[in-house]
Amino acid sequence: MATEFDQLDWNAEVEDDCRQLVRLAVREDLDRAHDWTTVSLVEPQKLGRAAIVARQEGIVAGLPAARLALAEMDSRVEWTQAVEDGARVAPGATLATVAGPARSLLTAERLVLNFIGHLSGIATLTRRYVEAVAGTNARIYDTRKTMPGWRRLEKYAVRSGGGHNHRTGLFDAILIKDNHLALMATHQPPTPGATATANPGATAGRVPSGCSSAGAASAVRRARNFLSNLPPGDVRRDMIVEVEVESLGGLEEVLAAGPDIVLLDNMPPEKLRAAVAVRDAVKSPAELEASGGVNLQTIAAIAATGVDRISVGGLTHSAAWFDVALDWLN
Picture 1 (spheres, rainbow, N blue to C red):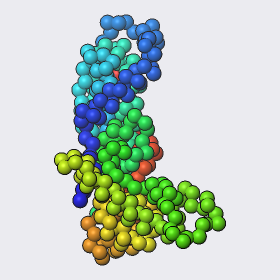
Picture 2 (picture 1 turned 90 degrees about the vertical axis):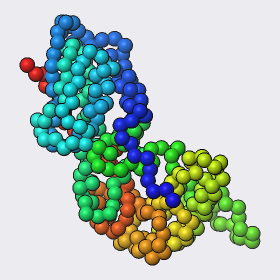
Picture 3 (picture 1 turned 120 degrees about the horizontal axis):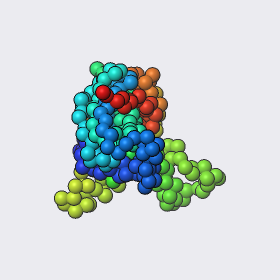
Picture 4 (picture 1 turned 180 degrees about the vertical axis):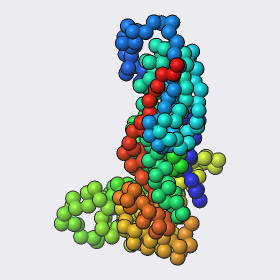
């Protein structure tokens, strides 16, 4: 069985996404024109040197993106990095120094700080969650709740903060969620001799009560069958299969179907602990992932239940901006 999703360090794909975002950001600021404030005040031959400085304590992420943004703006700018992504810094710490044409440094200032501020905010929040589960077996994962276009960069920032990446997109794993099961349940052929329901719309949008576990197990078996029928050598045959369940009834049946991961959605700690006991009793190799209702106040109790993974959408959709500035040097 598969054990882990792809983990994103800074690589060619992340850098390519970053370049596209940089080009869009340059167009947003300059609209294929100029920074007229800087042009009107600064002589073209003027040179400058500045430090990129943290204004708060936290975890740094996004320095490669900042370097790339400066190079896109003006290849003559010199970049000297003082720390690495993933480092914890104190207020006043220098993250990097830049030197070159003063016009280019001023024009690129906000673009550079935006990349570092956003990604360092994610890394800093992620580290708080990682530290909150220290001493347990639980690992912290991100989700697909990311800004469009920013996903690889934001997931890279999660990694810089010590977290783990869930699937990158729909292309690299099978994750059977409640709406997949609801759709399957509402489109099943009627059982011979069954009486029609008095309320045909009662199950619309939700898995019918009492059918979720059987439906989840069936969906896992269908996914496994799909993967096994792919051509030999096709790397997709090894994709992770994960399934979401909303109750513990029939969990043994779901585990017997062979998922790599069971996503336990919005369950309180006592139910999570019971799910771990069921998994351990049947000696299933599947890992258990808690999701929903996760925040810094609840994370420790969730981790203490024995689940293997905790996914936190807030790492990317609710991280506060990291305060960073550009200060001129003499």
